[in-house]
Amino acid sequence: MRLLIVDDERPARAKLRHLLAQQDGVTAVEEAADGIDALERIASFRPDALLLDIEMPELSGIELAASLPEPAPLVVFVTAYERYACQAFDCDAIDYLLKPYDGERLARALARLRKKLEIKVDGRPAALPPAPLEQLLVSERGATRVVRIVDIQWIETADNYVVLHTAAGSPLLRQTLTGLVDRLGAGFIRCHRRAAVAVGWIDKVVTLDKGDGELLLRGGARVPCSRQYRADLLARLGPG
Image (cartoon, rainbow, N blue to C red; front, side):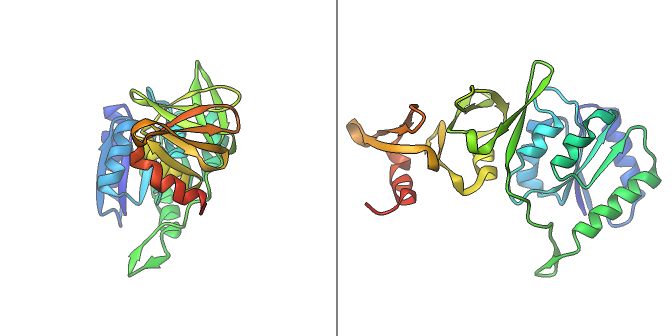
């Protein structure tokens, strides 16, 4: 198994790496110090599973698990807090390790991962297809806000965040636009280098000067649409 440790505390990463070295079937291990670092390493390392802390700065483990690009690696949460267990299993976590844990408890978690990776594709282990993403979890001033995917009308970048525009507000999520659109799937499409839109919310496509355009959404929002993305967007909307 290829495993990515995601934890903002260096001693915690070191302990977990040490215990993994004593386990059978672990072929490669890498580390990430936070959620944003993890998203970048997932793309290059392609882990089978994440061993994921929950309380981390900027992007929590719960938010990261809800925003993984497809095909998503499996997730085992490794945390000192019991209170996140329900949220963790809502993210289809394979296991929930409470710190402090030992090698025997870690071995049981790895055994559960192996069972999920038993399906073979071209002779190589592969994870089961992830369930369609139904919601995102956003941390807001000590609370966690649930944003349903069907309520997101469009998304735009804001420095290291994306803005999730809904009728009820526009919360910020620590994530890349490309990574989030990949995770959201066919219901969303890029319309600008800094924006993506939910296809089902589009009411009109307006052409402006020099080939650029603007999308009028059923909720009343006006979203930029650059000519770079206009042809693909029109193709997705169908013949006309």
